[in-house]
Amino acid sequence: MSSPVTEPPPRTWSRTWSRRRLLAAGAGGAAAALLGGLELVAHGVLPGQHALDELEGACTVAVPPETLAPAGPVITGRFFSRARNRTVGYTIAYPPGHAPGSRLALGVVLHAFGGDHTSRYGGLSLASALAARTGAASRAPIALVAADGGGLYWNAHPGDDPMAMLVDELIPLCRRQGLGRGPGAIGATGISMGGYGALLLAEHHPGLIAAVAAISPAVWTSYAQARAANPGAYASAADFAADDVVTHASALAGIPVRVAAGADDPFRPGVEALAARLPRSAIVEIAPGCHDGAFFAAHQHASLAFLASHLTRGAVD
Image (cartoon, rainbow, N blue to C red; front, side, top):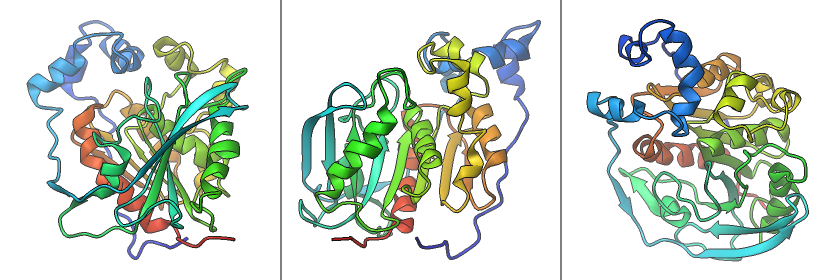
């Protein structure tokens, strides 16, 4: 696993709530109402916040201009997952100039809530994301793989363990095809729920995941918040404690980490709590934007470049 050439920038962010966000929560107990309802807004349970952000320009994000080369080949398939107790679909995308049989590092892409293996990454298909470039910068070629993780978050649930599906079934399937076979050759990335899942995967399997890049990770600061927004996310308070990426952030020591979240993202408190626990080598960027497609698209190139720069290409026969 390679190391960054330069020291990452200092991890800085604001811990204050803007006046607009407090006023949006209403008078009398505004801060408490806001904090308790952030995740409800993010999942569409409470209306209006995103429209207000759009009206005031908080969600305006500059997306870097990109060029799109002809995309590489894509393989799709299905297998019965013993870990998930059901058949799941998967997609493997190759970068331009490569095809099945190429030995490449591998990025595991974890989809967002309501998604599946066909979901887009930053507004692009997996193959197009690999073919897209910004400016004249080049990127080491890697393959990407995604699989159906379901809608109960990426942590284990009774009778359904999407994390075990990735580690025990999907990654071995890819390795049999020459992908991610060398030491330090597998990374993880995802958006929203998938960003949380990518961090969780790296924390649970630090010997397997060599780098992680999370975009707008859906990180809650308490079981009560998680249960209020998505009752199915965790089976119990004990499960939340076991799979809380903030509590277990020290497991990422020695693993390159990049996290990006919008300044007006309702999950920002969780991201800030995570940032405070991450190793100091981690790159955490709180940038203008919201929890939406514009922000995701603005950070997908940097996230893939980060993974590619930290993964090796060696293969073990």
